[in-house]
Length: 352
Image 1 (cartoon, rainbow, N blue to C red):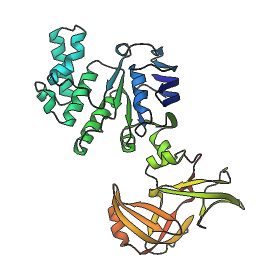
Image 2: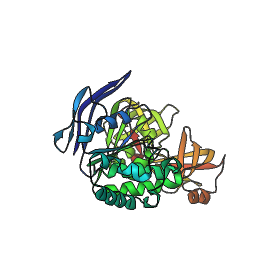
Image 3: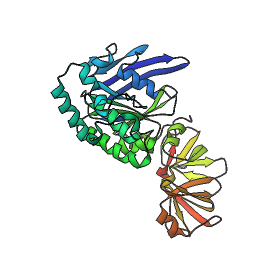
Image 4: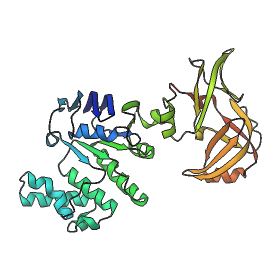
């Protein structure tokens, strides 16, 4: 469907480096990266707003690298919406159809159909300066979809929308994708990738550093940068050693983790997902791969419940649901035990 082959582009001091991405028809691809990582520049290359210095862009087995934006069958929704303030909602949505000399009756029919689908038919006669962020997003989306693009390109589509409206917009994106529309969505928020993507690419300093399903990327991050995006805070520099057939990771603070058998370097960085660690208020009877006594240092509310910091010789950050936290009946300075399986320890391929 969409293929980027060896795409490079210099923009001032910034360079997109040798980008290779393949997106199948009907996929929801989320490109995840910080501000300045190159994700918007890559979206503009796909749309045809700029041309690459090297490489090729293919859509449906056709090389579109030098084609104009109107000839690519892509639709781009800008982060700032790029709505015409001097036009009504109807005028904004119908704008591209007027330029194609489509008759008035057909335009009215198509605008009303797309407005009804996006639940904005009641504001068609309103002018855009008085619209909410969620309404502006729907208008921008309708204006793009009315051209029937093969690929929908979304530039930080939820960044300027109130939290209460984000779920509604996500439902629209899911429905469009379920109906067969290929979507490329760039964002800095990994939660959007988790909730929407069938495939994720992580971009950093102009490089795609990891690509795969959300499960593959966020459960097996290749380096510290990706791991932080996944909300992982437990990082340990370790010495890795095979002790009589059992692999162990020795921390600087003398803690030792049992890890799964594999081929490891002698030194590295190991991560343990926050939600892989369990807390026990009493010493567990069951024999765990890793079990350590520690002291609670901090408890703070988090997005998913409570984050508990435990000092067990190293600091561990553990996510708990609110009911789990209440059942443990712990507070600062409580003595606890933490446990996690050997497979919870992931040795990163890089330390970036």
